[in-house]
Length: 135
Image (cartoon, rainbow, N blue to C red; front, side):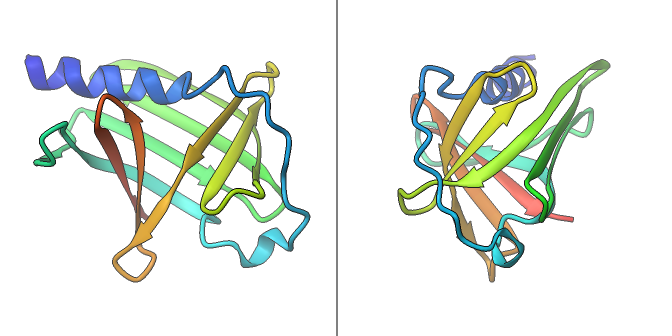
């Protein structure tokens, strides 16, 4: 049960990830060449001690970054569904991406690509790092 609560907290936190950021310093580079483009699935997270924890089977979080700048997040947290859509852009800060939800909320995150760019990690809070895999 503790593991479910931890993952639910991680997913909820991502949904409001750094919402206080109002930076709009986005790059005007060609987004079609960006590594983030594609469909990604949350596969687990590194806890505060650095130990990897797999996402439970009933936790399904998907992110879709499109070349036209569209973004969609869908989540099924053991029967509790949700998500949002909006736009994404790479910022002028190295490895930082910005998602603007259709409701105007702006989220930013530092993303580290790994395993030949088939996975990425992003810190969420208190030393927790979410890990996504390209689908």
